[in-house]
Image 1 (cartoon, rainbow over the protein chains, first blue to last red):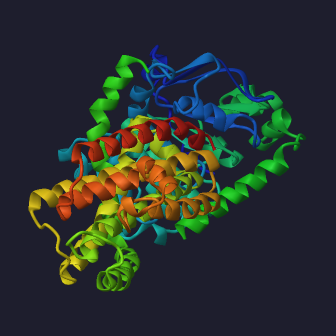
Image 2: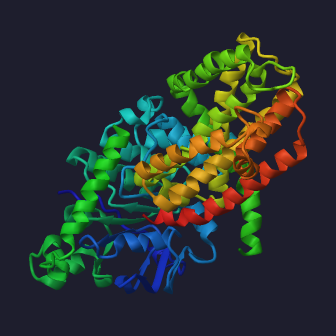
Image 3: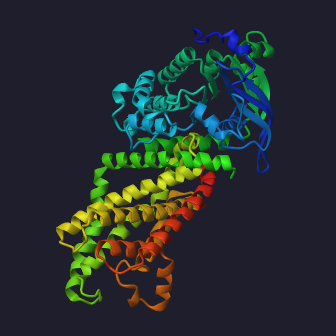
Length: 282
Length: 263
């Protein structure tokens, strides 16, 4: 497999401003410690992967970074903006693609992006150009005037990517962006994300289940398990830490494996949510 | 709420309201059949119920024909029937992950709910326009003064906005489409019958009159009658009650939005 990873520009990496900075973050839902004192930093311009089994706390971490859930203790900053105090400013500079396929099937592809261009206060003069630009990036120009309910799963994902890019975000947050997609659609999504990152120097924070994707695309990874970060480093470092010739699958199993306690309930919920979306989009 | 947040809410509010109204217009454009199917009920009310009761003169409406009295009531009713189920859309958006994405845009919750409320107003208004056309065809004696029509349109938007907020509040409480559908059906008819939409309040028994006083639909109907058929009413009171209801509805619905966004 040819690596699509690009070098992170050294100058950017050494800059003191971190794209994401999380310090001793804790979130508890009733008796469950969803996130239990994690700290990590994402450098500007890098692709950072959050790995871990379902229920590890990845999505909760993302909900904090997208300002949907205030930290109960500890803190989180996005480009030095505090998630508690500067929520509106953070929302202006992030793009977010949630786990579920979530577009409005009653509107066309163009209108779906137009809605977000307006919600992100893209100035009226620039709006049309910006929409055309993101449509081209995700390759949906020809389908733009069709109702989004006629789109395939891969097209829906690309449309969502276009929505998340319309405000030219400094940080793109992708929660399981390729779940439920066929291999062609998966690599098509990643090719576009990588091209964008190179072109605009965007920072990407991604959660994924697919170890091959993480290995190929992420500059650095954090493995989460039961609300903790149990390992962090480059894919090579993580593999070395487990043993010679270890794959990232081995890393995953080593740090988070053998424990399928929560898997049953979680995957059922996921199946349900995918079905729900399918019903709506289809 | 910190002063800074209030300022930023006011700054984006008009733009968000416009956005959600424009999106609603696009939706109406894409699905015009809904506009026509929803016109069937009001047609039946005006054509069959209205014409019949105009002829048999059992409901005292002074010296104006009953159908003139009825038309504003049916306009209010058809906008109510649309708005009261508007919460279903927000649950649908929540289930599909759309709501989370909307909440991650720089849109304060109050602005999001206000936008949705006015979008419901636009949807309700589109229906009322259909009924206006129908009224013209049936030669209902309406006041076609453009200023009165514009004021009536505002009354419809504000009222539909309030009922949409009521629906979104219920959505935030029950969090399920099926249950909301059931509740919507259970409350629309009482709201409709315990208002002055079909008959003058003076004809009702005392207990029913007490309900009409707290029923915002009554104030909507009275305002529309005042504007469209020149019936005597206190317009300032009517519009004041509707505006305050809308503002209260927006605040309560916005405070429940977090519950929906969490799921």
